[in-house]
Image 1 (spheres, rainbow, N blue to C red):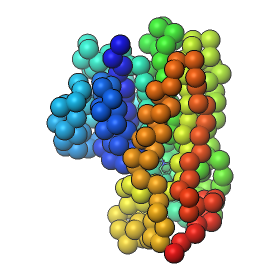
Image 2 (image 1 turned 135 degrees about the horizontal axis):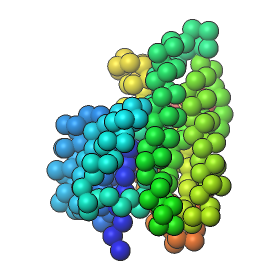
Image 3 (image 1 turned 60 degrees about the vertical axis):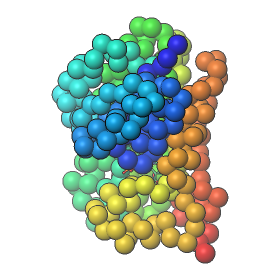
Length: 250
Ligand code: NDP
Ligand code: 8X3
């Protein structure tokens, strides 16, 4: 039977690439993000392959999340696969120099946003005793690196929530997985460095970073295993990266 996936952060990077591979594999799509124009462009492209609808909302605003999800058209209301991907780093500063607004953004989006979306979708999964949740963590969920403080804390929270979901949803037959990428060349560093493109480009200079498609392939692999197989946790580095800070640059 055709499945429906709800992807947060589908306007760029990992979320967009996941939408593309899901569409090629005939999965019905609910694409989410704040940038409506990008959602509509992607909808236009992927509608050639599958049914697509879009929802514009900010994951950190709980009323927006609930209203958007309640507004889904009838044929998109059953969500089989939830990809909790929306998120970013905001800033890269020592704990003593960090901006409180950046801290708020990371906790509100990466942690609370993931919870708001999950809260809105999980009840229909528990009712059906069926569903799949993929949480996009990071190597920052497994390790802490200089100046990564609050971003790392937010992703450690994602790791904890992933484990918690697996425990609490176990009796409902729901699959829960986390994928923790190392450096992926997306708009991530543009956001982290607030549009400083030189600084963002330097993050990926001198080695082959992961591409959004690499992670999307892995997400598709994870969700396309037989239902009794749950890949709980995956850490994925580029070959040139040994730890968050050890990089073999040319
Ligand atoms: P991008 O910046 O390319 O994509 C981030 C996505 O998140 C965008 O689609 C953006 O959509 C969405 N988003 C951000 N804030 C909000 C918000 N408040 N409400 C709704 N949507 C939001 O980065 P990536 O694709 O790299 O990041 C995707 C995930 O992967 C994130 O959780 C990130 O932490 C994680 N990750 C990334 C790594 C990397 O090196 N790139 C490595 C490890 C993990 P819009 O702006 O339209 O709202
Ligand atoms: C993104 C990877 O190393 O910048 O989560 O934290 S890192």
